[in-house]
Length: 179
Image 1 (tube, rainbow, N blue to C red):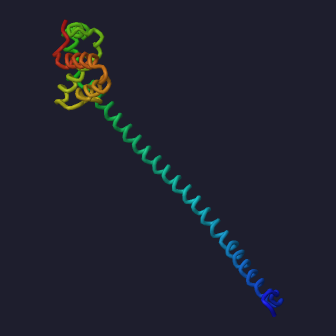
Image 2: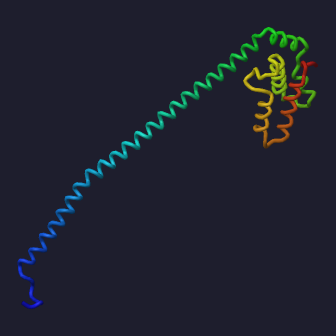
Image 3: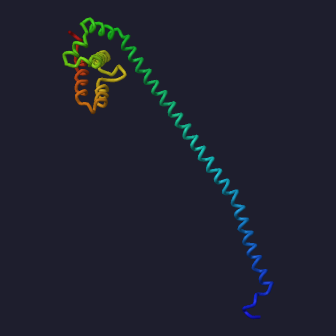
């Protein structure tokens, strides 16, 4: 037999069964791996959704706790304010101040800032609240807190900041408003 001739028929059939076996093996591997891959993808999606739900549940819990804490703080401040306002000593102090011709308008005029009456009164109220409770913050904020708010609010307007601080300090330093 010469080399140019085709191989005998029996050897041609030998190659085909190998190809068929390889094809069948690859098809089996692909078909067998599809359920595994599908279940892995499904499991990953489910775990992602569960993790997201768990995170939102935890955040809801934290929000509820913080809301309760904030409400408790507000209630405590309102109670402290109410007790301070209903305290006989505070009541008499306010009456003495008002009887002493309390006039925030006149004090605002004296510092050349007639529009600052509210800050003058706030400064005075913070000073009186500090005196009646022994220097502790009995209101929802302190004199220093208000100063910090004014500094942040009027940081870009130095003239307004200076005028506001002067009015707040004038009210705080006043023993009583006199005309």
